[in-house]
Image (tube, rainbow, N blue to C red; front, side, top):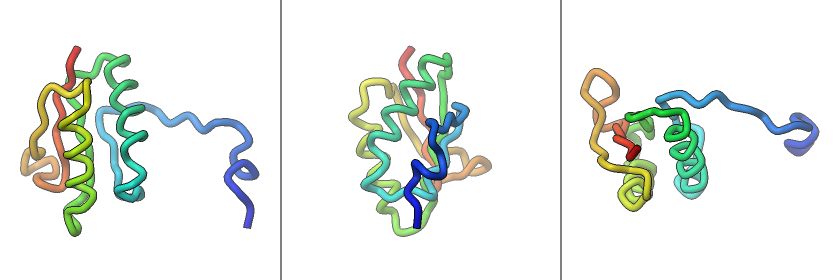
Length: 96
């Protein structure tokens, strides 16, 4: 099996959008990802973003909420509206 450098010799640039899906990440991986993501969103001028953590066992949601509640760029957080994910996603209002 080859390591990631064999597949991607250059950094992979992922477009920053107002929605981040964390389904493929474990709870222990999300803190640096969320920090980088929120910083990039503020730089792009986003005022509101949605973090999709899924419903599952609630472990990922609890970790995400804990990180967001203490994050310097977060003004407010809440469950997403029912139509946009409900308790499987968190709506975040960012400081400007």
